[in-house]
Length: 165
Image (cartoon, rainbow, N blue to C red; front, side, top):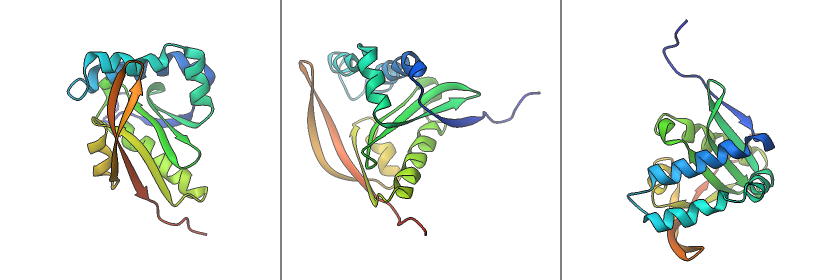
């Protein structure tokens, strides 16, 4: 039977997801950030997934959630130290369909439930409008070194409501 709406779900990261998430990471950077970053900047940024063991360790060291569509991974996000969104990537084919919002909402709720009153993110120029539409406020511009390239980002934050007792 056909469904009128896709079925999105969230699940935790598993080490076996590393290769698929590295592909989502690269596709997202390649296809979604071209208006804001040069090809050389994108290549330097994507190099973070070249060492899949290190990429897996980074995702494992954080609270990483995976968004799925009918069971297949389409995006992921991670929370570092319970107070910083470290990564948020959605496959271009699924961008704009609510997976990113679902991931950020979940991380906000988890952080809040663990006592965080504020979250931060260093967002790419591409992701900045997404966060601002969701109530995040720009705090400062940054320049980040990736290999031989420099990438501009913006630190944004969001005050979370106090968790209900």
